[in-house]
Length: 403
Ligand code: HEM
Image (cartoon, rainbow, N blue to C red; front, side):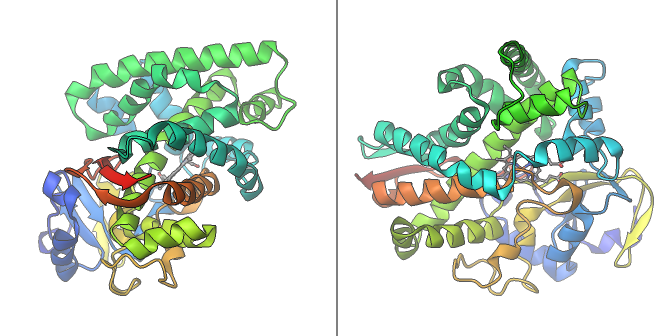
């Protein structure tokens, strides 16, 4: 055990009580240590500055999924190779990460995100036409269709494919729960997704893609320029589809809950997009949904605390936003907060979310249209949270509203 580890608090991050309301547990942990706690598998980093610094510390921390692959004894499988070689698993200082990152950066600029807003509005309007009339639904189910439809639209794939791929997509993130029962589910889902990517790339290449500005064109052009090989191209396509799916739907659902709990805030979202941008930033400060894992690659000290090679760290972005030394009255959801946009919801450093501008465009446009269409929404049933580790957020948000 590291020196001082006995003085820091254990956080029950695997429990449903913690997922439903981390705040009381966090207050106790903060009283015992300003930025660090323990959990059954290692450490939970909860202080804002420590979260920002350690996310960007590629010299001492490894972001690979090796322990996850080993846990499922999946070395030698295509899924294991995917988990080992995807962009988020590549060391931030490596040639491989820089090469892959620069090949996709051009498809995710703020300008490209702005250009996607028309497509986003069209998709959300169509979904609202379909879902709103009964006056109630589970918002989490509704939200699930938005990001995947947008990414499919950007790739140029028919949304008719979504029902076939939805379960496979949802099952991919089960792997981070380290539950042996999840293995057959995500492995089967992986086969479906790989076949989809392979068929799509082959058919697009046979049509002579690579010239246009679409997402898949950009990836194929990168392959043609020698920036990625055949397998990396397919892995990247799947990374973007999987990476943009659960994260954005969970964040939208959490944002909706926080907004409808305060009628004035939701009302303001119906009036202008600027209010939506503030609400989205504050929700990313209050309850972001991704807590990356890191493994300590060599012994090092951070602010007097000694970490040892092999230690596991959960970098808890949802807790970083509740650091009272940075965010006053952190449990309050207040979109007027001046520094909400300092949130760590998209990470920091070399791995900072490549889709952040697109994600914000999806969240803002969706919230604006939803607030115009679903009037006086109220929670109408039992709210259920997802596990805190992995893809956090709401599993169920049943709502009723006036149309
Ligand atoms: C609200 C929605 C989203 C949230 C909260 C989110 C959060 C994050 C976070 C925290 C990271 C850093 C991971 C790390 O340091 O290990 C990350 C990386 C990444 N995100 Fe997102 N993300 C969102 C949406 C998206 C979208 C829409 C896409 C693409 C369509 C995307 C693609 C990626 C990719 C490819 C990476 C890896 C970047 C790299 O390793 O260089 N994300 N995301």
